[in-house]
Image (tube, rainbow, N blue to C red; front, side, top):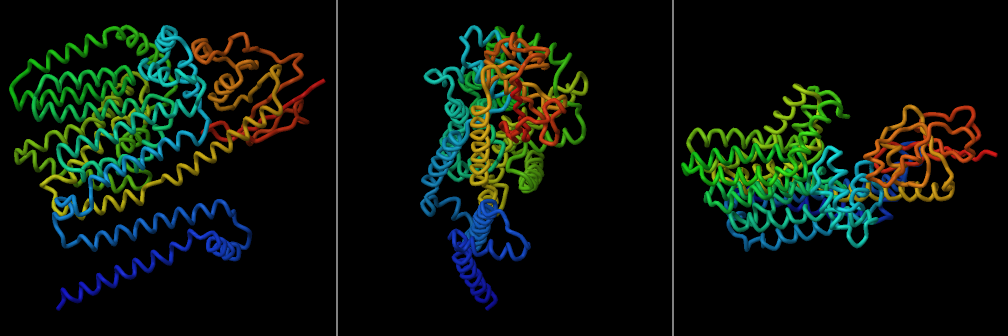
Length: 560
């Protein structure tokens, strides 16, 4: 009797969910949104921003529908253990997994075309890509990063070196490869359900979206981490020399892409080798491939030593505190914002079960543990080095290793030791759907595009080749570098830029002048809250935004 009552209750809840979904979906109708905003005007006592609140209402409705979807799925599958996981035909998981890859890929490519704005480091990447291979390597050797990404970027821009959108596509490509590789790997070794889980978590992590369209090396470093993670699995499973070799090749690529990625993969290789030796009692493959890796990196070793000595003497990163250490840790955890708490909960739950499994001598639990330890050991090692020398580690250096954490969650979520995995997966799916911020990200990119168009239009109307740029004392140090890239013909007064940097972005050191005496065409750039000095008090000022930086005041002085 109680069971029947509970069944009726579930039906009532399902009907209520469907009815609520239909009614709330009316928010997508523009006239309904306008009616709601009129009520908002009355409640606020003033006219509210229509564009902003229209976007908020749509975004909140999407989140609300995701929550309702989660509730419906939970009620449908609550009493159907294993059916969801084992019967792929029930929900066509193969189709769903590839559909997810396709939708994510299209979204990333579309995102790359939304805006042409770039920040300081991206201008350096774009500048280097226009040099010859020899010059590129020589200039990279004077910087603090290895050359592989810049060479990849140069190859990607071979037909259009000045295309920002194409440069962003070069960063999108490795993320699409990760989506495809994870789909093939998990389907082959486990099931399509694993692939869906991995790719959902990956695409619900805002850092992945951010670095997928940034003209820097982090998405490529992430790809090499993913490939090494997969070959680490095969090394432990089969101990074949070819898997060791593939691992080392991709690890060396990672090392030529980003130095902290090299440290992370070195730590992962050591743990993988120890586990392989403990399991198979063979060391030959380990020693040979380790030697191959060292030989492949020797050509760049002298440059690394020089760059490390330069960085330890002087670098821009601030001191390591408990807050920065916590930020490092949070960067290694997937999902976004407060939703990371969900990921932390799962990580803690899975870690306890992993430890128990290891105590019970479950050999299958060692590989997931290696995945989990890799990013956090990197953070610990980097923090110790920074405290022992000087701060040389930043939170974004953790981002490529986030695939290890996602790998751990994916494997643990579907492990035999975890009960009610079907319900857990549905819950994770609901959280992931709730976490998807594609609409918000597109909105942000559109804002950046509008700001960039306003910037270029204003500068075109007010700038000439004779205009001299000046900056307030408190200006963000990145702004002069961006200006030098955007306007290579114009002079900059009272601000120094390193010769290495100006060479990289094709800006002449002769354009850096010390005084503006006699100049009648000046653009003074201030922070938004600053006022121009008395000699520029009658100038026309515009509030403009460059990339991700706060708005600055651009004051154009046209003297006699």
